[in-house]
Amino acid sequence: MAVLECAFVNGYEHDHTTAEELQAEVDLYSPFTAAVRDLVDASIRSLAGPEEIRAAQAEIEAVTARLRAEQLPGSYGVRLRDDGTARSWGNAVVGLRNPIAPPLRIESDSEKVWSDFHLGAAYEGPPTLVHGGVTSLLLDQLLGHAASAAGRPGMTASLTLSYRRPTPLGDLRAEAWVDRSEGHKTWAKGVLIGPEGVTVEAEGLFILPRWAREQVAPEDIPASFE
Image (cartoon, rainbow, N blue to C red; front, top):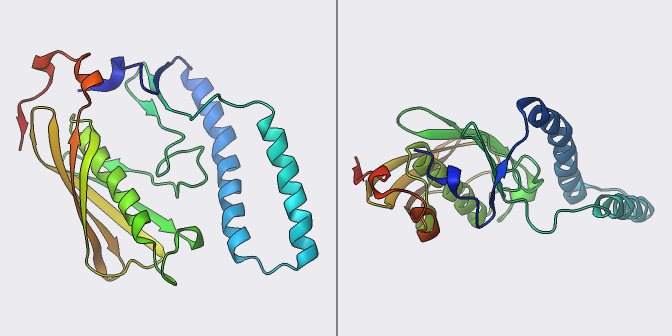
């Protein structure tokens, strides 16, 4: 059930690009964003001398000025395509054009969604460990994705996390699934997994917002999902 396909409001808009045009944008922006992401990591860990840092700063400022010459008026939003897919390229977790995003590539089957990814120096909290707020960010996205994959899209109403052990920087995995649903409410659960097992457990409540419910016939919203 693609509930939000008709919801061209609140930052959602229709995307009329062809498959060829979309692929051209992927080919252009994916390596560009990866280069900026690599710059973030390099800036954290660089041991270059003062003169080199000042020179790099001037170059970065010049590039930033070039990119500022033509900009979107606000955030990227979500572009909804005719085939039912969506471009969330500004998203802080999965956004193809967002250097803050690791990014996560989320896969799914009939039971759950999951992602294998790497977190480097940009996501550090305690030394050598992932910041707790970052783990919350990632699991919020995974749980919401699980709800959407089950035909139960919604916005986060509550999110509860249990930190079982520290999460090390490096290669990680996250999994999420729908636990139950009732009307426009969906409960999802998920885990973050490190080399030694589960590090964080999460449970969230997701609610289809009123503005979206007003565009969907009541009979199109399942009464429950078990």
